[in-house]
Length: 85
Image (cartoon, rainbow, N blue to C red; front, side, top):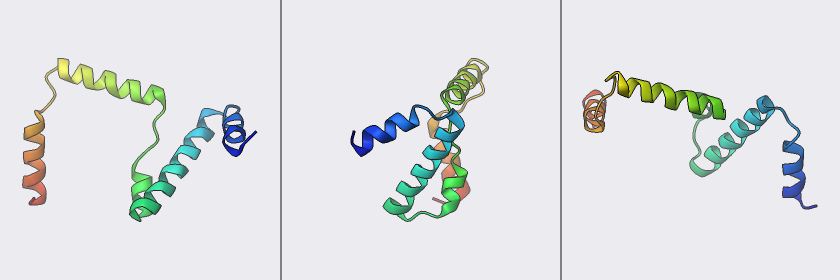
């Protein structure tokens, strides 16, 4: 087995909570090396499980049905106004 195969086989046995920790750590490493970003960014972006992602989609769909949404143009205009862009 090569390193990749060993890593995958080990990860298959880990619980989801450990996999999320690995994902978060890996994202931080890539961000720090590619963009030299501050550690705060890695703490700001929470890892999402598949269930979290599906719940967010369901919430968004319900908000659209309820009329609780803004057009993208309105959102960008607000960003520009708020941050003086």
